[in-house]
Image (cartoon, rainbow, N blue to C red; front, side, top):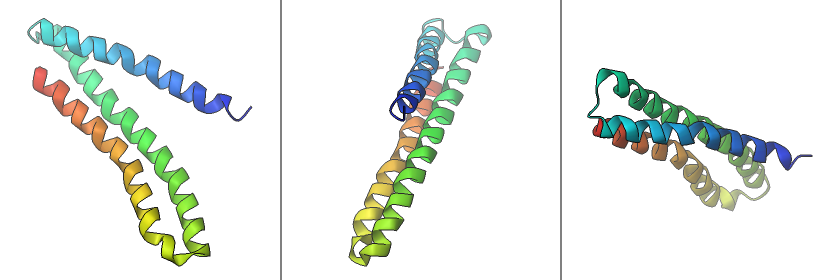
Length: 105
């Protein structure tokens, strides 16, 4: 039962973000008229929001595991920090995608 929840979250976010990509492409093709530009802005906002939410979930899981590992073996602190940084990178990828979308408008 525990495996189904992450799959549900992943499929839910995929079905949410896929239309955003299509809307952004349509807004770029149409020359960014006010009617189509709104979909580009919505897709950029959803890209940042979804990636930030995903990064928050990842940092919560990785951070708690990392702190448990550091409490048992303090020499693991450097490796744990790297894994937390990788989880935070998800939010940066969403921000880059949003900047690319806004650059097309």
